Image (spheres, rainbow, N blue to C red):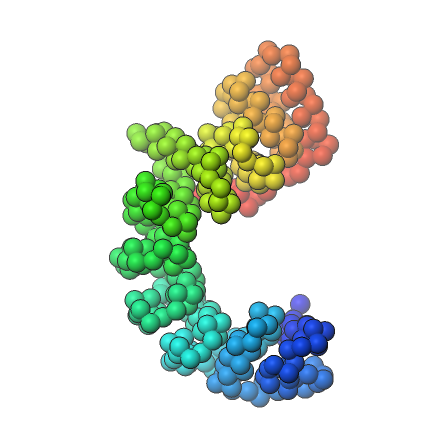
Amino acid sequence: MDRKVKFIGLLFASLSLVISSGVAAAKSDALQKYLGRNEESVESQLKSLDTKQLIEEIDAIASTEEADDKLMPFVSALFEKKNKVQDSELLKVIKDKTKAVKTREAMVDLYLHIHEKEPITAELKELLNSPDVNERVKTKIVAGARFTEKDVHLLKELIAKDDALVAFHSLKQLSKTNTNEAYTIASEILSNLDVSSKDKVSAALKSTAKYLKKQPLNHKNYAKTEEDFLNLSFKIIDTNDDTYLKDSAFFAVSELQSKKAIKKIIESNSVDKELKVFAIDQNFVTLKEILQNNPTESDIKVVIEAMNLYPIVDLAEALDNAMKTINNPQLKEEAKNAISIMKEQGVKGNEKWLDKN
């Protein structure tokens, strides 16, 4: 779809929401002036606004209760003028505490878009170090910026200072920048679950999974580190009442894409069917590797159970070949039935998971 057509469609969809609700038109002069006008007129009006005027419109809308439904078309209009926006103009708005938080977040988005091919700028680092900058704004910066090895100290400071989403995204970014440093911090967080925030625990679980995936399986400490991580994750899954933490632990385990991880997921009574299906989809290559590397009866049983939950046609041949080394009549029958379902109803393996790094 043409960007202009898509943009105008967004605007009119937004305005339609205002009209149909029967309320907010009177609440926002920024929107009221566009009601009842055709697309050409609206487009012409938006083109006539300079960047300062568009930012003012955005801030007027961002201050209303229905901002989430209305902001997108006006932010899109500003993005269309990105080549006319000065960094100083955006940074001034981001720092301005009189502006709505949603306005400041939108300016962060645009600034990051303009600098998307560059490492995080000195100006954004200054904002992250400032105690006067809103936490949501800092979260936007950390989540969207590109960090390098030079920023390890900054990220570690942000993790230490914060207990919420700034820390969560800082640890995620540190995992990309320096996996070992992130793992050290994650280990400390996970060894103190009772005093660590949910966001930090969630990021620590993800960081540990990322660290383990980068380690060679024959590394002297890998087996114990993986076992400890799986035990901790399933302790959270089995005993914790917090859905956010339970899901964080599950997704971290699934992301490992290891034989032990997927087996524990399939065999667990604490993981529901929908999440198991997700893990099978994410781990179809791991399941195939299990079948191709001298599988035990226990290994094959797990794969059959997985295929009964979510049949993948790509694994049918591997399961058939694996069964040639097994003498268990009941298991052979179960495999035969599973293979039939895989060939008739199975989906193709999801290729987005082929890169295991």
